[in-house]
Image (spheres, rainbow, N blue to C red):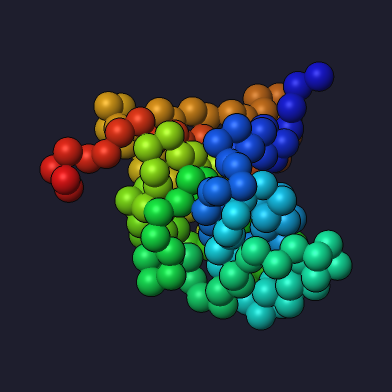
Length: 187
């Protein structure tokens, strides 16, 4: 059976995570990705700007007895204030399900966050970006993130796109990035 993009994103990240890894959930939402990462990594940093997301995630983690997550009520564009080197990161772009649909991820801050995450990413590390774009503002963010990913240097990053082709409306799709080597200019 063909995997859904969300399932593939988890498989993609699981291949590089272990009990010594640090991971990042750049958009914690309801906490499902945070829990996924917490079960595999030593330390997880989870970001969101909405208190509702932080509370839901904290409750979910407590129910499961997971204590290796630092919940950060701040925008993902400030990731560099909290996080050092990471092995994996996940983004779910769009809005928090069952919440205020006017509070969305935005191209400017998402691109800042992506660049900072790639700078923190260890060689061999991976980023999974689920792009939900069927809402107001979604097309602009989708276009900006695709342009960003397409322009990453192929000598430093492997970038793949996984998307449904025969679904109506605006199905989400997955961008997968793996860091191949450091920027030699930064060294």
